[in-house]
Every structure is written in C-alpha cells, then in structure tokens.
Amino acid sequence: MSKKFYNEYEIFSNNVKKYRNKINLTQEQLAEKASCSASYIKQIESQKEFKNVTLLTVINICNALDIELVDLFTKK
Image (cartoon, rainbow, N blue to C red; front, side, top):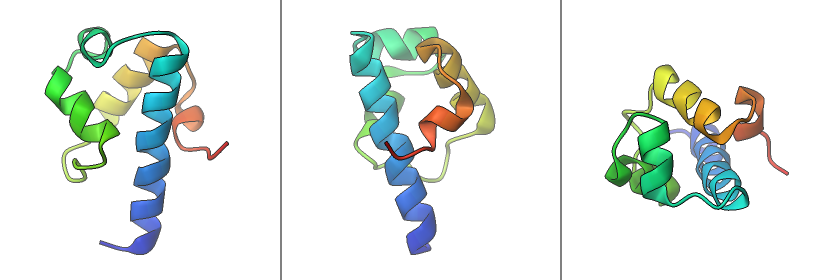
C-alpha cells in the first residue's frame, strides 16, 4: 500500500472519529445511522480496515454525521 493512500486513510479514519465525537454519537449509533455494523465503524476508526470501504459507505457516514464528503478527507 502506498504511503499516500495510508495518509489519506488515516485522515479519513481520524475525521470519522472526530465528527462522531463532536455530535456525541457512539460507534453503535453511527453504525445504525450509516447502515453498517458497529464493528465496521470500529475497524475504520482504528485504521484496521483498508480494503472494503466503499463510496456508498463513505456517503452514508457523511449523511449520518451531517457533513460534506470533503470534510472526511480534509486534515484540520
């Protein structure tokens, strides 16, 4: 895996957790709102899941967090 991809995934992973915490959602609550499993959110936030993140999942997470797609991939 390229270093660039890893850095972008790290930003994505950190932002999922940051925005989830910002609106006081548990991983389980986010999973329910994003139509995925809590273990999947845990994998994303722990940076263990690299191969199965789909665009639909990313969009569902954005909708659940009420943020724009770009917000998940922008380092702040």
